[in-house]
Image (cartoon, rainbow, N blue to C red; front, side, top):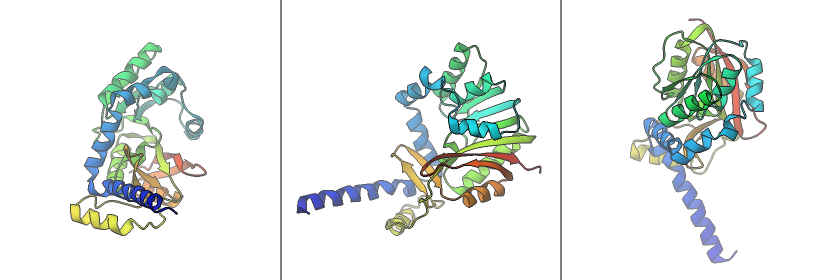
Length: 261
């Protein structure tokens, strides 16, 4: 290989490794804010709110989750509501829907989009990881595609699930969207240097294999085994009723039932 091509490839690899350090030097709250700022960009707000996307309704994978959901009516909280694609579809199906998002303009777009279609959706501005929710208020809580994986660290995810569980009725259900990558736990040459960077910067001590900044725009924890998912759900007080996993890397989903305390 020509020396300059070799040098070019080496610099590209070095650049990728340096980028990968971002996920360990930022603490969990930094990672949440990093992601929020991405979605708060005006271009993202407009993209998630465009009519042709909103009117698609549930995608095929979400329809499979809906079919596994034992209820067809009730109070429903949709987290990560974006422009309202999922929330509006559920409202059309007869659910009483509240839409939540950590970007205020997304919530406003959802409410307006629903109104334009003759529907009523309540909107609230809430960060999933710090949400203050009424007790035993919802029959269904729906986390839109990939949303659960945007919560950094297992500790914070368990705390978040506990908060959601407290807001479900005694017979409540959680539809949980997450990222899936069966290769996420494979060893990497960068594991040790990333560990050193974490220590030197007093960064994210809850970092796990599978944590990445996806496309350098949002934090994601990619789950790599069904066992990992079900242990985490179980530790938070949920029974797993159904799981949809893609054949390769992508978004998956699960229907969970809150165990009675």
